[in-house]
Image 1 (cartoon, rainbow, N blue to C red):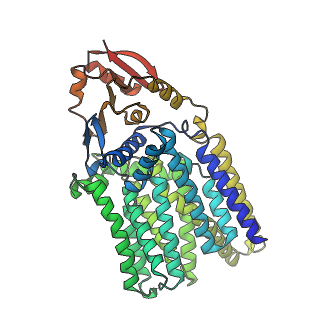
Image 2 (cartoon, one colour):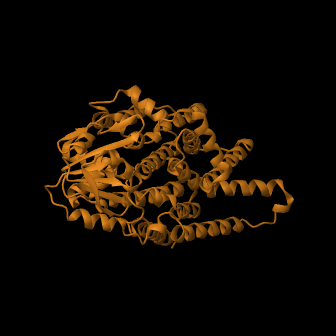
Image 3 (cartoon, rainbow, N blue to C red):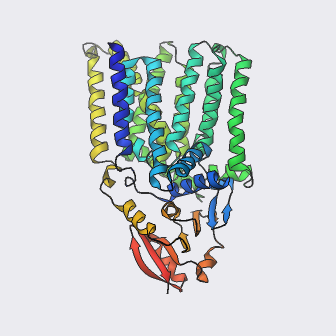
Amino acid sequence: MKNIYEKVFIVFLVAITLFFAAYKLTESPPTWFDEGFVIQSAENLVNDGIMGIKIEPDLIVHNATFFSTGFPLAYPVGWAMELFGRGLLPARSVMVLFTILLVLLCYFLAKKIWGFKIAAFSSLLLVGFAPLYGNGRNVLGEVPGVFFLVLFLYYLYKIEKKKFVGSYSDYIMAGLSVALCLSTKSIFLVLPLAVILALIIFYKNIAWDWRRILAGLAAGSVVIAVLLKTQFLGGGPLVDVLRDYANPYAVGDMSVLVWQNIKRFFTEGTPIYLLGTMLIWLLSLAIRKIRSETTSLTEIVSFFFSLFICLSYLRMVGWYRYLFAAQILSLLFLPASSLIMFEWLKSKFAWSRNINIKIVFILFGVLIGAQFLYLHYFSWTASYYYSRATSSLENYFNRIDFSEKIFLYNSPEIATFLPSKNYYQYLKINDELILGQDQLKQITVGVPNKVIVNNKEASVMADFPLYQEAGAVSRYLIFEKK
C-alpha cells in the first residue's frame, strides 16, 4: 500500500509540475534578450557546427566570452528546433522537460536521504516555488544546470552510502554530471571549490579508491573536451573568459554593487526568503556538530555550494535568477533542517516539550499552500498568462517575405520568429562586449528592408535618416526605408 501511495504521489508531482511548466508556455513569460541569445547560439551550433551568433546572413561570430550557457542546453534546444521547426514552442518545450526531470530527481534524492515523508514535503516546496518557472520556462541555463547539479549530488550520496567503494558506474555518472553542470552555465564554476572544501573536511572518513575516482574524472574530461570544442575553440583567451566571469556586467565600482546586493538580503522578499532558509540550514548543521552527529558529505557540498552562490551574487547586477541554484538546494534541505531544529528546541526549552511534531508538518503545509497560491495568482509568470505578445510577433513575422532583409537592433529574441536567416544584427551585451558594430553601416547605406528595435531604444533610429517608423508589434517598433 505504501508503494501505491508513493507512485500516486509521483504521478501527481509530474502532473502539477507539467501544468505550471507548460501552461501558456509561449506567452508567459515574454521572450527577451538572454533567451534569444541562447536560442540563436543553440540553432547555430546544431545547424552550422558553430556556437556563435549570426551578425550577417553568411557570417557567424564566435568568442567564448560571449557565452555563459553551454552545449548541455544548446544541443537539446537546437535538436528540438531541427526536428519540430523554428519557434519558441519547440525551444521552450526542452525547458519543460528539464523542469520535470529536476523535480523528480530532487524527490528521489530527498527520498534516498530522508525517506518518503520528507521527500514529499521537499518536492512540493519546489513545485510550488514560483522562481522554478520564472527561470525555467525561458530558455536559460539555470534549471538545466541545477538538474545536473542534483544528479551529481544523487550519485555522490550513493557513493557515500557505499563507503566510497561503490560501483564504477556511480563514479562515472558523478563525473559526467558534475562536468555537465559546469558546462551548462558559468555560474556553476563555484561547484569544484565546494567539493574540495567538503572533501578536506571529510578527508579522514573517505576511502580513497583512486581507480574509481580516476574513472569518474576520465568521464568528466570527455564532457569538458566537448565544452572546449564547442565553446572555446576558435576564439576567446581563457583569461578574457575569467575576467568576464569575475565582472560579467563590466561594472566600474564593484564595491557599490556589492553593498547594494547585501542590502537586498534584508530589504527584498526573495533574498530574505533565501537568507531565512540558509540560516535554518546552517543552524541545523551547527546543532549536529554540537551533538557530534554525523552529517553527510553530500549535504556539506550542497551547503558550501549554496553559500558560494550567495557570495557570487554580490558581484552581479541583482537579478534574482543568479540566486536560483542556492534557492533550490536550500528548499530541498529545509524540511529536514527544520525538524532537526524543532527536536533541538524541544530538548532545550521546557515550554516547547509539549508541542507535537505534527505542528511542523502543518506549518509546511501552510507554506506550500501559500507558495502555490502566489504561483498561480501573483507570480511573474502568472501576470503574463493572458498576454498575446508572442502570438502578435508570430503573426507579424510569418507574413514577412523570405527575401526581405531584416536588421535586428539589440533584439536577438526576434530571430526566433523570422521566416528565414536573412538577417543582420547588432548586440550590446555590456559596455565591453558588443557584436555587429560594423554591421550598423548596413543601416546607414539602406541595405535592410526593415529594422526591428525595442521601443525603449527607438531613439537610436535618429542616426539612420533613411528609415522611418512603419508600425509596431508587441514592444518592438518596425522601421522601413523611406
